[in-house]
Image (cartoon, rainbow, N blue to C red; front, side, top):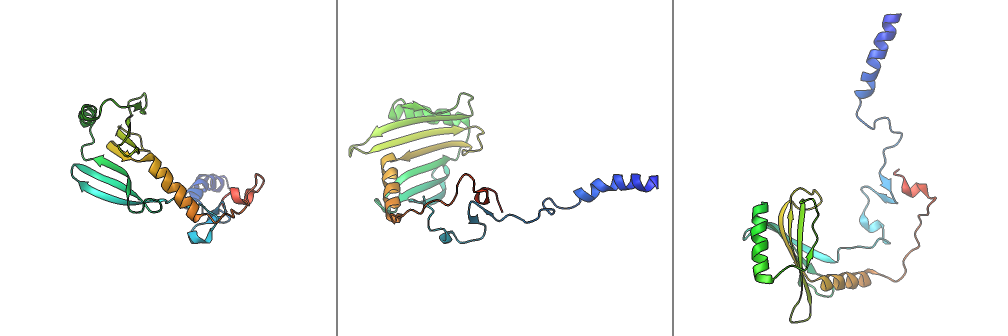
Length: 194
């Protein structure tokens, strides 16, 4: 009898760990916040779309590994408002060369936005062109921040035109009658996955 009990206690943990995780869940969740996995996004007419810019991806482009070209679809349809390119050379040594050449051609940057740990180096230039448009330029080096592209990157964009695109897009999509939110602080049905 004691041998059976001991064998039962030894084998019991193996029974629990031999099944895939989640098999004991009463019901597998497919919904949270009123959104259901696998449903069509058009089923939610009250959500606000943020795709006010279209993007084109480029690869292996004249010394760049890849990039994203963003253009307007509302106020400036088809016009490029942001260029984001990742250099083929991802080394910090190359970043230093780039920074030196940027400074020589464009002057000193206006702003440092990097961190103090040496992981993320971001230099920003701000200009106003001959047509009175704000033009921002960023040279960035990322050593290992997983939330950013690793390596060297340049970003060139019209901040005001991006904001105008978003405003125009939101105005076009808005029907003026925003539905009242269903969720309240006490509505756990929306807050907990089901």
